[in-house]
Length: 557
Image (cartoon, rainbow, N blue to C red; front, side, top):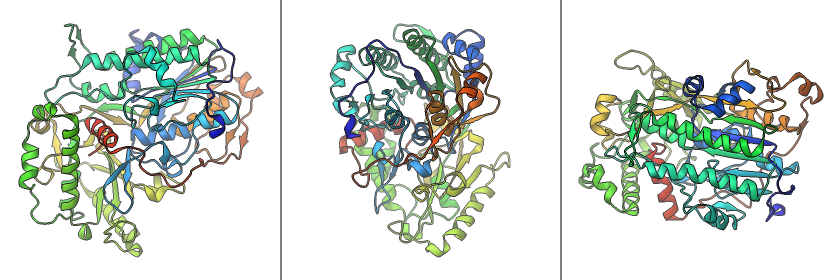
């Protein structure tokens, strides 16, 4: 989009956005509805009463990187090409972090710019490097290095942000290995997002604002089960999850105070949330099933054992670069110990996402391409036949890539993927995977990692819509995450690209609006303009830094 360089909003100073897309990462009606009923989320409650709300179904599995990209493009991962936070390096089993350059399809801001509308985009995951939009963009903390000119478009925006806040943190706030939590860092993250967004709206007016709050999801990961926290000022917060939602509610309230009642608002989440009841050791499952083989003995080497026995509190005391280098070294040792010519499948990512080891596709593939479909069916049957040792219930809900996705990039994703334990069982990274059971309950997990994540993702997210043309209680059926782009374009009176996988949710709007504005469609080309194949845009230090952040969240194994 070189033609848009340097433009920061071609509309009159003082005007207000016509549309706000407010992303509330991991939001679930299980939290929202009781809190609204108790009057604890006044802004969101007002939107729900004025407009329509319901479930927004995410992709399967509900992976943050793929889900937000799907929501912002209106197409499934088979078309936009992002399946996880990382992909495999070319001719290697080692991972490479994905970036915005891995996204193959146009995003909503591209489509809006093509129609002459300016956009402000704040903190959307996988938007680093930022797109050269008509308007402005600050890359999302999920997948971006530390704040600076490189995460802003135009680059000079960074100095304006620096004039508003002393620090604009790009990292999430995890619990430490000892269970402590940096509450002040969370407050800084919340306040910086709010103050910077409001400031930029005042100084660089845009037609459409798109902003995402990640802290709701991150807090849910750590505080779903043990939800209380005593702050450094000795204030006791009884429910940290509710606290995070309330901060987002206040942020949204300030945006609406600035924009006014004539602005249409969609509050959306990339997925929902719920408790983690057990953890699954995928490496042990693959070994037991005969799908993976390791060279030599299965136990860790002396150096690996020494690294694994290092207490978590001591690891936290080490410089970040040391910890990141140590994790990369341990991962490389695991990859090296796998006997690849005798390994039929390996998992990619933090959910069920098996990749078959195919000759000609993987560096040391052992499955002949002619046997691919038979082998995939056999491995699928192994997964589907596995039962929980205590309940006898199936553990894996399995799909092929083609059953969930379609498009030119399906083959770049997992061959088999799906849901584990009805979304209540999460994968975990174990220090001694070969010595750890396949399933680890909370009592066992407390001995291995006493302050691990207690909240995980669910496919059932949230959509709340309100505005002058939105009717009350109009969402009778569940919406799909791919419906958001077509519905936004429809609400703005714009044509919908025929390549979109979703539909315009016309039932959200008043009869007068739908009668006067029947949906229209266009044959816009879905593809972004590329100079070449996507490669890593991160320095080694940045890659290690972002990897550690994602690993702290449990998003990288």
